[in-house]
Image (cartoon, rainbow, N blue to C red):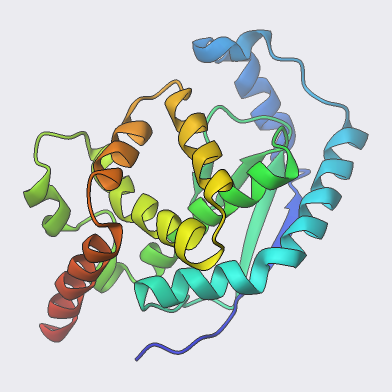
Amino acid sequence: MFFCSYPKIIIKYARALDPIFIEYCKSYKHGGWDKWVSPSHEEVIQRTENYNKEWAIWQEQIVGDIQKVLGLNFKRTIIDVHIVSGNPRNFSNPIIIKSGYPVDEFIDVLSHELIHVLLQDNNNIASWECVDFVKSLYPNETKLTQDHLIVHATLKCIYLDTLEQQDRFKKNLKRSSQASMNDYYVAWEIINQLDHKQFISDYKKWYRKAGDKK
C-alpha cells in the first residue's frame, strides 16, 4: 500500500571515486571529454554545498511527488548521491552525478535519477528493466528510449502538474535535444505525443497486475 515517506538524500563529494572518474574522463574521447579540464578540489566542494542548499528547498516536494505520481514508495531510508568532478553519463545505481551542472539543472538531473531508484526499489513489480508493457507498445525503439518513457512521463507530470513550471520543462527538453545520445529526446518526443497522465495510469495498471500475481 502506498504511503508518503521520505528517504534522506545525502549529497556528498565522492572523494575516493573522483580520481577514478577524472582519469576515465581524460581517456573518453566521445563528446570531447578527453579535452575536458577538471575543476579544482575547492570548486567541486563548493558546487556540492550549493547542490545541498538548493536540494533542501525542493526535496520534500519532489520526492513526495515522485512517489505520489507512481504510487510507489522508496524501500530505503537513505539515498547517497555521489558528486564527482566529471562524468560523461550520470548513474542511478549508485547515483553518481558530475559537478558541472548549474544548481537548477542539478535538481532536474537528481529528480531523474531518483525516479530510476524508485523503480529499482520496486523491481519485483515496476522496474524499468522488465516492463513488457512498454516493450509491447514500442518494440522498435532502443532499450534506452523504452527505459525512459515512464521516467519522462513522471517528470512531465511533476514539471507541469505539480510544480507548474513550464519554463523548466522546456529547458529540460532543450537539453535532451542537445545530448550526444538521441534516445533520451526520442523518449520525450513519444511522451509529448501522448496523454502523459494516461500513460502513467496504464503503466500503474500493468505493475499492479504484476503485483497481484505474486
